[in-house]
Length: 203
Image 1 (cartoon, rainbow, N blue to C red):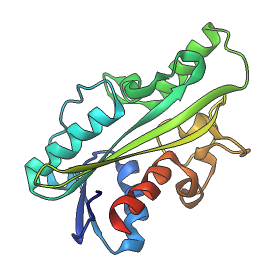
Image 2: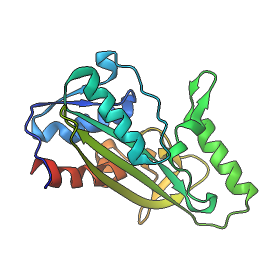
Image 3: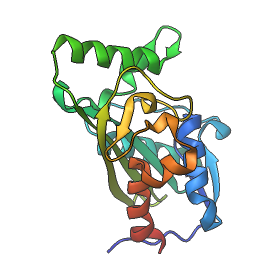
Image 4: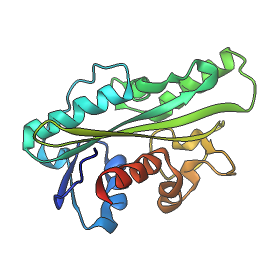
């Protein structure tokens, strides 16, 4: 039996400003106050699992333990079929540089590996998002969302974050980074997961 969320405040366990803003917009119609981990000066826990669910659970339960607030954590990434679904859970790791995360570096690395593998076009890709909603008593709810598309090159668009400039959803002529936030939020992997979470815990 799924648990219904009854608080008027939720902690989003992320230090990623793009993800936080996306969540604020998704939660806005519910009248629930959203607070981000960075606003509360929370440390980022080490993500030691090799699955999206495992890492999302680490982040959600660490945030609950630090604040006593119910917390929602996301772990997401892009899977490129011709690269055996890499980078997957290591999507953010591919962006790590000595000066912090740089997703242009990550997108170039992905493109270079596809070229090296002589991967045929279209190059199938999928964005995956796992949401874990955790309560102070240790209970949690898990949902997964997906959106399928293709890896395109060169990068296109200025909006969005992460790998958005190289991901073109199936049936669309634009990348996520060429869409408005509202357009992307209507079809994204996170929106798919969020819709499932609403049905499971908020309706």
